[in-house]
Length: 91
Image (cartoon, rainbow, N blue to C red; front, side, top):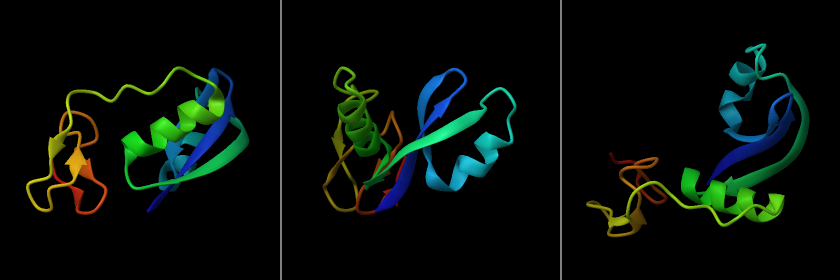
């Protein structure tokens, strides 16, 4: 599981990978002002689905169609994050 962070910024709310928050804060255009909550998820698509639910947005629609992972058979989105929740980065 990875940690993702939801932040309020000068341009609205956003979700980012936990390890990239410092990089985002270094960008003056982002101006992360307040941390909203953490999301524990297996991949980006799962994190976005949880984020959309918590923020009251329409359901998250991943990019492309889900396909079985060539290593384990779990569903993943090769045209989205390309990341299997069990195997990591595939595409």
